[in-house]
Amino acid sequence: MEATNKQDIRELHFKLEELLTGTERERLISSSNRMEYQKRDTIIKQNSRVTEVAIIISGMAKVTREMRKGKNLILRIAQPGAFLGISSALSNDNYDYSVCALEPTVVQFIDIETFKFLVSENKDFAREVIQRISSDNLFNIGRLSSLLSKQLPGRVADIILYFSEEIFGSHEFSIPLTRQELAELAGTTKESLIRTLSEFKHDKIIDMTRNGFSINSLNILKTLSRLG
Image (cartoon, rainbow, N blue to C red; front, side):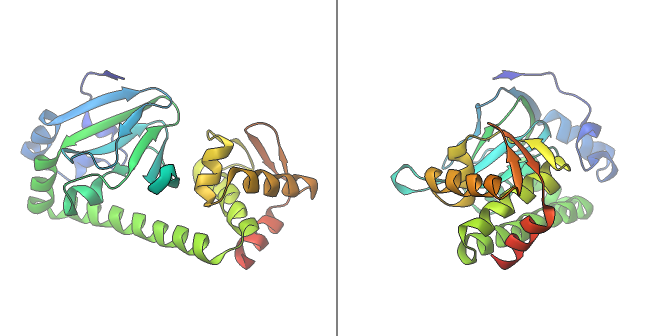
């Protein structure tokens, strides 16, 4: 992991320069730090003290909740523009989850006191933050509903559709996760995940290589997702 020079804040996904005054923008830039991470580097460690809010500038990372007995649950895949640790920053002293880079990833860190100042003083900035929190909460509700109410084929279909429609925007893609990590995303064991993927391949719903996926029947996947 290495630091990079501070760059124009206009590169941020949601165009902060349109929300802040000149003075606020200067304060944000002066209290920000941009870092580069390589694949598998830890960006945020669960239970560490919150000192900054992070925004992904480029790359991709997994957001993981570390459970008891060494088990993990992957909550989501964070892409450019995603806030990291924002809920923890506003409601807790410690980060509620870990974040790990899945590929070379650039992250902008904003000092927590500056972030709180902007939220309290700039209503447009605060509105953007609230919208981001709301969007994350809606996504988490959907994920929780899937994990609790659907059988494994429905959960695996959800994952494939998630990467196809939300992450890559294509019916052919390469997932930057191991089979164990995919199992953590689906809330199951590695063995059960592999068995379900093999069944999907056997039924010609998907084609699959080591990490590559190709959807043959989008309708069947969506039916499995809907019926659970």
